[in-house]
Picture 1 (spheres, rainbow, N blue to C red):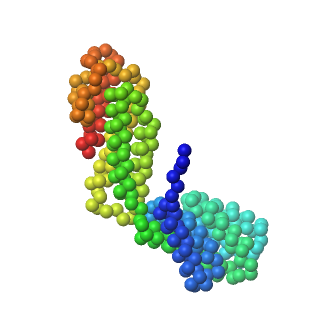
Picture 2 (spheres, one colour):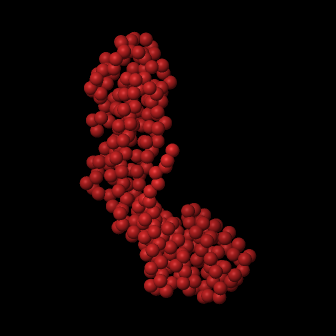
Picture 3 (cartoon, helix red, strand yellow):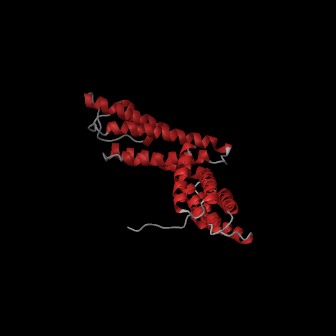
Length: 290
């Protein structure tokens, strides 16, 4: 089975960010363009909101690492014991301040200051690490915002329609053709749509004109979850050969045709099956009319 591979926009935007950082470093004769480029790579996320969050964590880590590294480098430059003690201190500080996502970067910056200075002024070196990181973060955020910004709203609408189609078509096969309904796949599709909605809501550029479309997407998730929950119980029941008049009417409304081979049935199994199916059809009709 072949896997389609393509260069995505996040890939391209990361390369653009690195290019800009390196160009800025050369223009201003910065000694270590590496740090600005790395900050850009880490901060270029799949959404502007995530870029800001990643950039914030990196800036916090760089600040903590630079502060502790500067203090130790003033008294114990290139001292491996002091460097190890500094790691303990910087991790402790990050934990106390609840900067958990900044710990790794804080340690990296501290190690860089303690080991890489090679006779340089500790103040200048620490400041430059902060400046490098600041440049890389801002470049990544600006590129992500202005260069082919993520189109989460459009993605949400596509996923919403795909989710509706998946439910209606698979429900048809389950009732009319007696095929198994893949409830696990339904759960995955619901999560995908939810994740896209969350990313969109976190963005800083939400268009008020998209409010109605977003509300429809949220209702789609709500209806799909109800269908999934009821289907999980329904699949534990033996499929009935009898359908209630209400369910037959709902099926006709959804599919414009009545299933064949089903007769009225009053047994306990039929009643339970029809009740659960009725709930599923109710939410499915809401989906169709949404």
